[in-house]
Image 1 (cartoon, helix red, strand yellow):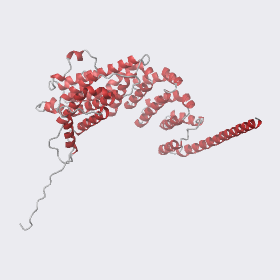
Image 2 (spheres, rainbow, N blue to C red; image 1 turned 90 degrees about the vertical axis):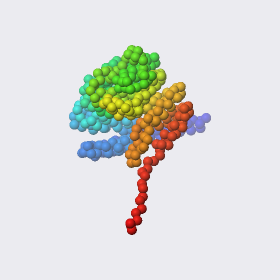
Image 3 (tube, rainbow, N blue to C red; image 1 turned 90 degrees about the horizontal axis):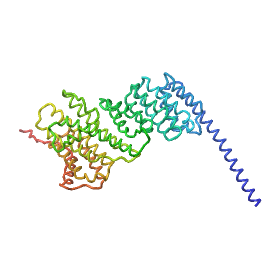
Image 4 (tube, rainbow, N blue to C red; image 1 turned 135 degrees about the horizontal axis):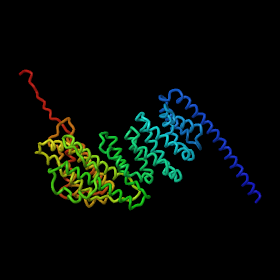
Length: 469
């Protein structure tokens, strides 16, 4: 027994010595790392930061200089000093980005609120668009990390998040995509505190849904797609499902109202929704006060339809914590109505409105097919009852866009729309593992595929001339 106790004590002494030696080595290692980091800072950031900052950040990221037990207070002080500098705040933002990625939990908790407020102040000052866009991405990272800590999350929810949303809605930032990106981050990571401002956010987004800038337009659509996550009183499953369905139906009814003006008397009567169902439904202001003079009228109708179709695609792609019920019937009715009008329907029309609409149809149809693809990807087997309708719709798109005499050396007409159709067929086969052959659908699809993959060739005739003649 005495020998056993002696062996145990020796073992414990050895482990104690090992850990003490390890701590000693860690301290030396940390001191060496700190000295190396100090050398890097003095070499690259104190002389020409504009030139060496990207290289410095790559070096620190590669070796994870800040990923030790605790970031030195001197480093945090330097980052905060640069963030509040009038001339070098951009450098502070760059250093803060890599600090957030590598810093320890305690440092992040201590400085999170002040970092968010400082970033918000920087965004409100007119500056380079690239700096503001980087600020929006950095703020998204901070909010995502902060939402994982319950105590910090409660602190931000009560003061910082409402302040950020209020500042953004006051439109004090000159970079619209950055504002929309930050709003999306707040909704995504802190939907509860944003819930009280949901109606104000929706009104704020409406003008951006008519923006001529494609980047701003897509950012507004993605932000609008997140609005159903907002909740004034918790995240009740019933309330969240209702909010999602209400917004989906509101967008669909708005598109129907736009189609009433765009399609007029050229669409089949059977594809029109009943007047009672559309008049009693709530719509967005995008369908009101349309221009009366061409080409503004057609341009507004088509761009707003495409924007709202993109909103629906963004909503269906977005992940939600709770289960949402997609109104597949209403969605398919909308797609059938959009695709019922083709260039053949307007072939004999010579008025300006019809000519402009005929040129714009491929744009609307492409967004409609993209929405159908997203529906198939998200709803999966729930789309099987609509199998015949889906295949008929896709074959119809390929039929009216088929080029009879393609010209060598030029892209095929309607190529983007036809690519969207083939992508939709591919998703359908992957999701359902089936392809209905009613009405010879498979044979028609195969024929269209063969026609499109056949390379275009020019007919060259070689004429032999007799030099004696």
